[in-house]
Amino acid sequence: MSGGRRNGSRRSFDEQPALKVVYDGECNLCLATAAKLRAIRTESRLEWIALQSLASGETPAWPAIAGIPPERLAAQLHVTDEAGRLYGGPEAVMRLLKDVPSLKWLGVVGSWPGFRSLSGWLYRLIARYRYQLFGRKDACDKGVCALPRKEPPIGGK
Image (cartoon, rainbow, N blue to C red):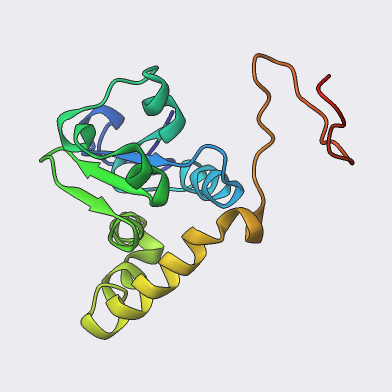
């Protein structure tokens, strides 16, 4: 699950620096963002890791992410680079924007002090209400989905 340079590549895919991106695999906004970044040219190889795969143990944690509690992982996007630096929330978004040639300027401007406060506030607002604003991927446990009940269950059955 990675994205990187597309046509016109100067460096081979394996020579690109790598970023690991931990995102909410149930959030439609997160899924759409990941799909878009996979489809465009980036300066780094992006490895997309759903936080659900970390929580289940399917994907082992690496040193930069290992000490982060699950509730913090679920609260915001996280990006780690090869040097072990960790970017969270709005800083993670700015780091990713700086990696897209056509959006690099936005990542720089978004990191300026006045814009940093605004982007942080906006990020926290969207992150908190992401499911209400953009919906949630339907998750079916073991291939079986439960239909929502229209009425609460009656009795002990």
